[in-house]
Length: 275
Image 1 (tube, rainbow, N blue to C red):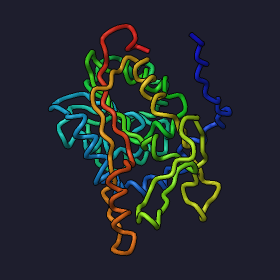
Image 2 (cartoon, one colour):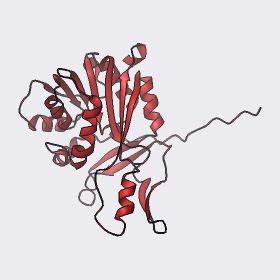
Image 3 (cartoon, helix red, strand yellow):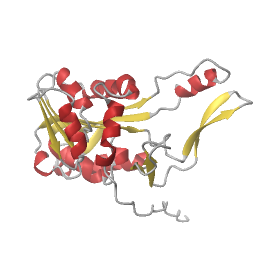
Image 4 (spheres, one colour):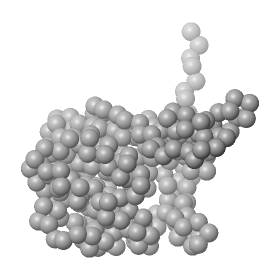
């Protein structure tokens, strides 16, 4: 029987040094505000709360917390203590300024890929919301989350959907004959690092890096860290098109192509979970 060729995947070029988020912290803080952006309020935060299913008094780790919108919401929903970490000093400062001091929330400047002593196995649950696509070194990130959790502790990861949202490599198109809006994907399997202008046309030098990875890379990294996926939600847009000639097709496409991917994983007891 002839031997099948091994499947290979082109290696991406080395990623540039990440600029971090301190230089865009003011923009991001204004975008998210006290309650979250439009997508936060209607799609992302409800999914995070639903999947975390926080029980009264639980200890929650909020990884890459930004300016703290989820951390504040978690204590409102009964969490006993939230440890919120982010590598950006400016975003942690914004988080502390967003509300009165609350002993149930502790904000710490820390690179989520190097949680070290913070990953002490004492947390009931962890969340990482809209951050993995902005982070180089996902295996270290997931290993730290696993090490922070108790046995059978749960983790919720929400990201831009890697199958349908690839910067500069995916876009909407319109089929006039079928009167259908479709999603075009030019590249998917190759990991990419894409500079993103946070304020296009106003400050072209203000950029972050988007790290695209195929879905298998995320699932394998979770498994390697000792985190087993137990639930998944593909989150659709809540927005609807303005009435017009394309609105029916646009709305139908909005109900078919998800914007975000939400994964719920559980820490597996055993040596792999420590990373």
